[in-house]
Image (cartoon, rainbow, N blue to C red; front, side, top):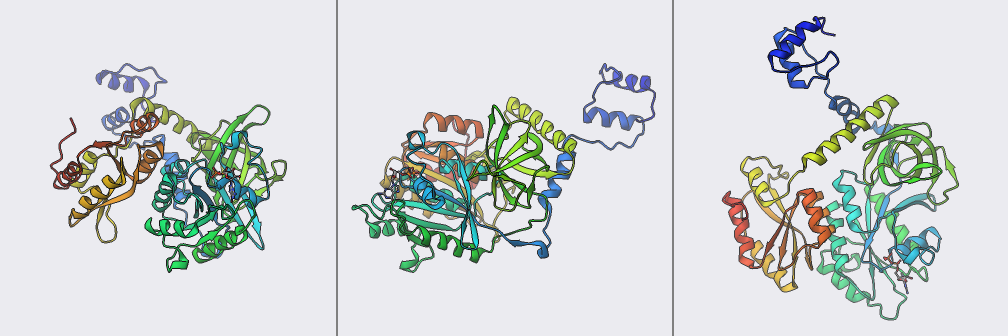
Length: 481
Ligand code: GDP
């Protein structure tokens, strides 16, 4: 297309030591050299450019305020295992599936939209808070409101603590459902006390956290919970533009033998329609059919904002947490999907990951390469895991003494026990380093941390923790031996 004779081009390339055939692909660098030599203006179309333009355009799109309308809130249930997440959601949707599910375990992400009077509420039930945070790590912000389920007889348990950190890190309003109020051992006062100790001061004690007492068995408080969700939603005025092309997130997907790929998507903005061209991660397709998630036989033609739907038409199963976009042209969708697939293969081979470590933080701090808040304060995020409450308190006390004009140490979570997969997910979503005091990561956590480039720093002497952070702040931290 340059109008140059092929031989001339080949001669030049040979002078660079490259032997090429007529149809060979040139890398951008060679092409640039070549163009310079022959005095040609080159407009390199890198494979990124189509993704950059099309997807970035959608991401940057600002909705016309006149087209915005109220949308249902998307609510996620979080909490300690067995505190009643599944049962409460079942009660809300009027189903009784706890007894029917294999082993009573929630294996899949459930997502439903339910009517409450004139309004609607969408619920997304993730198997654990790591799934919730994993979505955030991929930039997919699905949740508007987190409902923290706490069994009134057990009170706050380790996973409740984790759930609180994850919800706080997501920066969404938290409503507490104090569940199992029907059991004889229920002790709501103690639970309220524990909640306030964890920075969730109940509204009835003058705080800003709504606590609703519920029972998934008797149904007590379930209606109040829904009303509280709608009230919170009203305050935050969640809006969307139903007349634009849809964007949203894949919650999960599977290859079904008869229907091909079935993907559970939730629409964040716009309306998804049958026939739409979609790209989601490294998969693409044209929406063939959409089904209601509560009633899988009910076909839908349009899914407005906040609606979860089961969708067929993808070429392959998209990954959970991957964002989807509606494009005009199926060829563009295919190109973006294929490009992403080959890039992720390369990254996998090349081991490209963004590192989160003390050293990396120090390097970025030195180069001034860290974004601060409005006041210019940069945060060093830490997830603290320790053997005992006492260690946590002692370390926190030491950390409080650290004083730096531009950097603040922010402890996102401080809990007793070994490092878990959920910690690593939270760390990678929040750019945090994990400090493990007298504890170790379990096998799964270790391998995920390796994968994500999340540093787990192990200590067994309290002052060493603060000493390292001090060195880091002074730019004097040495690599760990
Ligand atoms: P999840 O692990 O948080 O999803 O908890 P489940 O919903 O599976 O509930 C765990 C167990 O607690 C089940 O046996 C439920 O029947 C029971 N359960 C859940 N909510 C309540 C409640 O409000 N009252 C009583 N008595 N039992 C409940």
